[in-house]
Image (cartoon, rainbow, N blue to C red; front, top):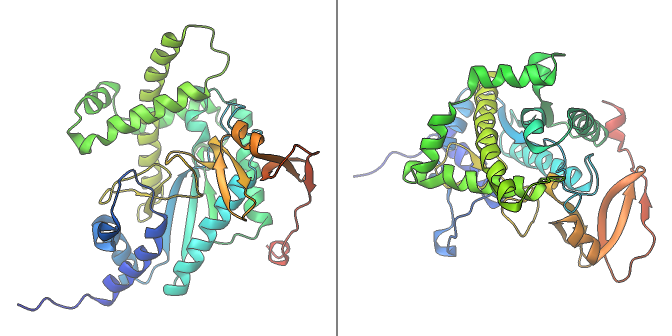
Length: 336
């Protein structure tokens, strides 16, 4: 029996998904003979095919870029630096490559979630605002025309941050009891919730500063806060879906094949959970770029400043005086 040939939208959807696959972020160990194919992602294929059939631009949403980690051993400041700069350029370039395949083009909405979690992760809300404002300026200055941002200010305006968080939790978050039960049920979603809970607990433990209790007390506190982070993450995801109902959902967390969210790797890192806001950039002697904890990068290279603030490390022997750089504004940025 002959199968019907794929429709033009289906073929285009597979082609676009193929452009994303080299950057898929997953914890799965796949042999070369079993590398992921577009057909392993039916959820995303259906979304893309629907948009393509209607000749609509493809919108991607990416929750993330919240704020810098409060752990000074991981980052070199509380504002975006070379890690965010490179990640933003990568995402803009990814949209541009989709546009080369598909005339209506693609754009990506960075859904900055710092205010959702800031009180749980120990970051002052003014630091989140400063990070978000600097991120917008970075996008504007670099002329990254495929990118835009979305955060709680776009939804609730000038309400106090605590009131914004309460609104989101009340309307969108699952109950704590339901989430605890889901985490205990390792068969649910192939144990994805349990893995996420453990990963977030580890991050909270590493990022906590100034805790005066015992190590075991901190571990208990982080387990409790991890449930809060997951509840708010679910709520933020539901809010994003409501405001961007036809968007293809990306995630900075590792995601298995076939999941409703497509995990995206922004930069090379030794840890599948590492992001530019939990690390800093080390430019290697061979020209490569890696994300590392700031303390590790400092042992391997020298600090570079850009526009008056720490930016990244450059691999090399010795610890000479910091290098200082001035950003060059591309012509396209002056026309925006």
